Length: 334
Image (tube, rainbow, N blue to C red):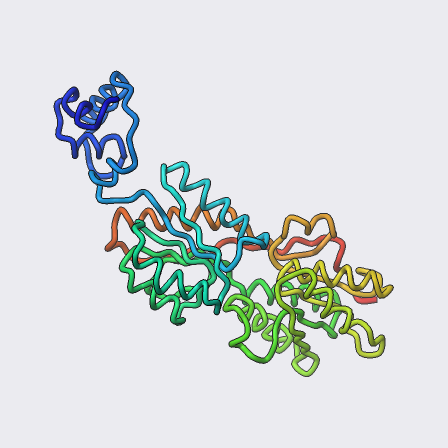
């Protein structure tokens, strides 16, 4: 089996130059690169990851931390990350660990400091939290997906703007009794993004002079939670709202199912708007704010590899596009 030394000898270059030419990392002239690639083809050379690591000082591995792999947003995000890493011959080490869990503390405080990896994608980790401070101490390039601070590269949507647009859509349709499913008065009980969405809802209600009619109902970001919260909310005909904004599409879909179960027609008696454009949003004709997590995953990889190539480059914050998608779950107030 041919080695990188054989390729280097045939091409008349050093092993380090041959490695740079084949990996695409570091400067090599076009003529030299072509000579090395021709030698590798002639010798049927296939790079071994351990050899590449020794020559370049890199592991070709990226670590990814997510709160869970069981929800649509995170699975789509991971698909985008993995596709982009595979295109660049990088491995992925995944840690799916819930917030405030002993498993996450173990991964961040004990496992990661002992692992070899080139960079990290941190999903949904609040910028001033203990977890982020620990990750920054690892002294590896980090890109955040979601919450971020000025001293870290990140990709995110504007969560507050997304909820504000969703609420304003309902206000424009004539609704004033609009509830928000997916929040509470305790900010520390919410994720950073969910708290921002709750605040966006409140800002839209305040701007429309509807502060006194604001109603925030606790619900975690799942269909069952949205269903349970909506059943209770919609049970009293005299006090139920005419419209609902879900903190995410899963919650909004849960509210649509609850409305059907208690005999409330959507959208003639209740308008529902979500956020995310979940894979089932079209099935439920859900009006929503679209974001594209797969593209966010790809962008996160691009930002991270730029940091690897140039650690001193300025941090970049990419605000991913989000737009209102009007379907049949929202209608003018009757």
